[in-house]
Length: 110
Image 1 (tube, one colour):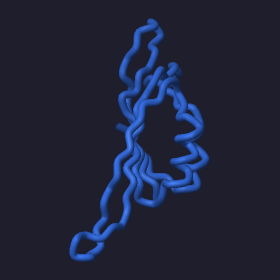
Image 2 (spheres, rainbow, N blue to C red):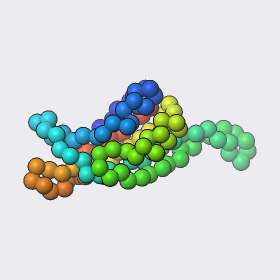
Image 3 (tube, one colour):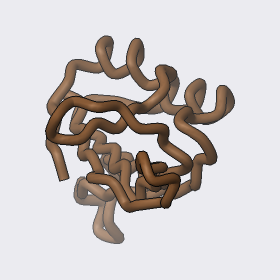
Image 4 (cartoon, rainbow, N blue to C red):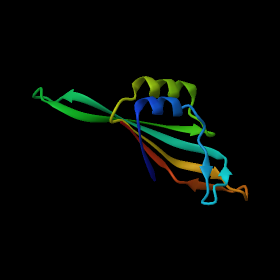
């Protein structure tokens, strides 16, 4: 899984763009589907009133190579420094027209 740390403004500008898959020779292949997990960090209080950081996870499947407009809007609105986005279970259509699992990504917003 590749790791990227990006500023919030960069994340907001990239999240709506289509994903692409490349092999080691830089040949592009179409993405059929992928799963996205959004780990949203938040500051809460425990039962004694002390602050704790808690992470809420949201997971959804995307068909094709893009995230739906509704989810893009949600991610742009809700994402914040320290949140993490995991893109995994990437299905790629190979040159032999067979589906393969591609490498995932982990994106941390700084």
